[in-house]
Structures are given as structure tokens and as C-alpha cells.
Image (cartoon, rainbow, N blue to C red; front, side):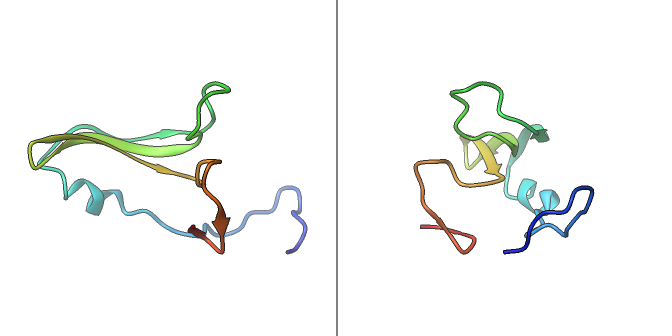
Length: 80
């Protein structure tokens, strides 16, 4: 793996299409929001995007984290 260079940018590893995600909801309460940092030491998810709403009469809070929570192993871009 190459060393990081200060001020350099790189393309993201994936792109998330929020429009397609909200299409699975029957009703959306909060459109996509972004949490850029951990809010506290016990914040296990950390940086993530999320949306809340209803899918098939069930309340859903969907969060897509920038990396897997610590209790999961991480290998080659997949949660194991």
C-alpha cells in the first residue's frame, strides 16, 4: 500500500446513489443526512449517511457506515 501524501485526494472506493435508496421507502421522514465524525467515545458507527422512513409499514433507520464497526473483521472491502 502506498503512503498518503498530504493534500492529495483519491477517488472514492464506492459511490452511493441516495435517490435509488430512498425509492425503496414508502415514506421518508428524514432525507439523507451525513454524520462526518464520531459523536462520542461510545459511537460505534462513526461517520455515516442515513435515512429514516417507512418500508412495508415498518419504521426503518438505514445507516451506511464509512467502515465496518469494530466487532466485524474487514478484508478486501467486504465485511466478513
